[in-house]
Amino acid sequence: MLTTLIWDVDGTLADTERDGHRVAFNQAFTEAGLNWHWSVELYGELLQVTGGKERILFYVQHYQPDFTQADLKGFIAHLHQRKTYFYTQLLNTGVIPLRVGVERLLREAKAAGIRLAIATTTTPENVTELLKATLGAESLTWFECIAAGDIVPAKKPAPDIYQYVVEQMQVRPEQCLALEDSANGLKAALGAGIKTVITRNDYTRADDFTGASLVLESLGEGNKSLTEPSDYIDLASLQQLMQGFQEQVGA
Ligand code: XBP
Ligand code: MG
Image (cartoon, rainbow, N blue to C red; front, side, top):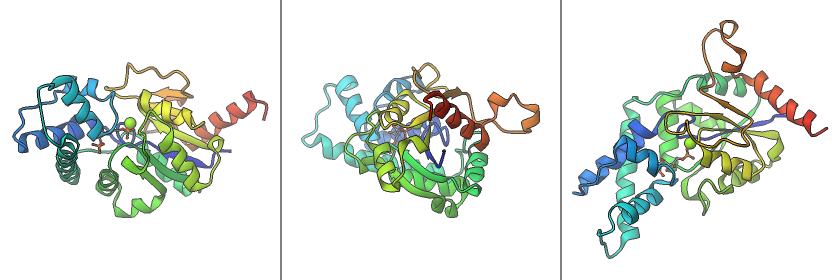
């Protein structure tokens, strides 16, 4: 039985990367007097590295090999703090909406007593500000567990963040469903034994989604009766999906 939905944030709740995180990284670089610029295309490559601090370190090592700093880790941590500031400022302007169908499914699940959680690589403030900007401050209480950023030592594709949520909520992985947008997120959820539905996006369209239960363009919206069933995901379709798995394993 499906009891719990665990949501990824970046790329799943909202398309935050190209016009959100990327822009904020560039603002932080400019403020620090660095002539680094992450184009839309380059950022697509850098997204293979999850975590903003880890992404900056990868960029320095591979694209700015001559850059030196006595305390590179400290320098990156400070740069990343400024990036978080710029990103949360940007979220507050309301320019980044939730993806199609996200609010609908969240509200439906909540009303049906399904437990909600978040498992993300991004910094905790970013999650809080995105939820406040899109659904209002009260929405923070909808999620029993918001697991984010450095709360676990290894970021996605490691399963740690999903294992953390499952432990915190005292729920069995087979009662959960993860909603993700990327191969790294899928690996993390599957690694924790959690079935996963993918809503892919421009940055993740070519990812390898082997093992996903469903790969969609979005959760769908609008008048259900006028929409192909496979393009409109509601709680009943997710419950059917879980039911299908149980029949397959003879449960
Ligand atoms: C998102 C990430 C994050 C964001 C940036 O992964 O990898 O690094 O791009 O956020 P997920 P920070 O979709 O799994 O949440 O700079 O705060 O790390
Ligand atoms: Mg994601």
